Amino acid sequence: MPYNGTISTNIGNGCAGSTEERVGDQLCQRGLCCMKISWLKAILLFPFNITVIIPTLLLWYTDYQWFIPAPSQIVISIILFGGGSYLFIKTALLFHNEGQGTLSPLEPPKRLIIKGPYKKVRNPMLLGILFLLLSEVVFFSSSYIFIYTIIFFFINCIYFKTVEEKKLIKRFGQDYIAYRNSVPMWLPNLHDKSKMK
Image (cartoon, rainbow, N blue to C red; front, side, top):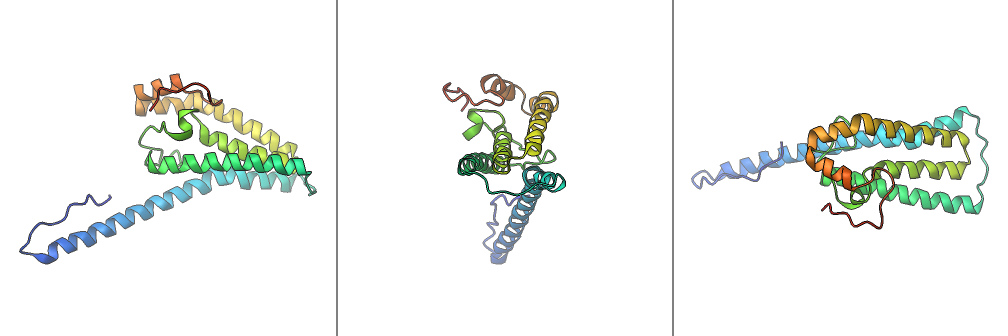
């Protein structure tokens, strides 16, 4: 529980205020530490496994033969990697700072996030991960990672429609319904000026 900023106003006991401050600081530090650990665990369990561990295993078990990619492949993969990294980092920070939650389904954001990339598309974090996977497809010229990326995309489409959106409606009610009706799920609407603020 974070420290609420209240300190003792008992002038007769000068040590009381400082004791409360120390206790409050300790609780605040513990809370921040726990939040950082939860955030790190969520990153390691979800995006790291999806974008690093599984593609590495696919390359390993399919006897991938390394070769130097063409310059055009390198450029395209860098662009995809940069765009994916930006979207992932930006949305992860919004989850932490605005939503007060983590990437894990066990500790989802407590507030509906409609800022930043979320003003243009409802799933910018997943788009970022898709861009990262596509950068690997281009760089390694791997059909296995490409098939894995397609499967990952369709599984998430089904999951969001059948499970995640129901949870969001239950948690945020009409606010999420209005957001869902004004912002596309996957393809960013770059020209439409969203009314969401």
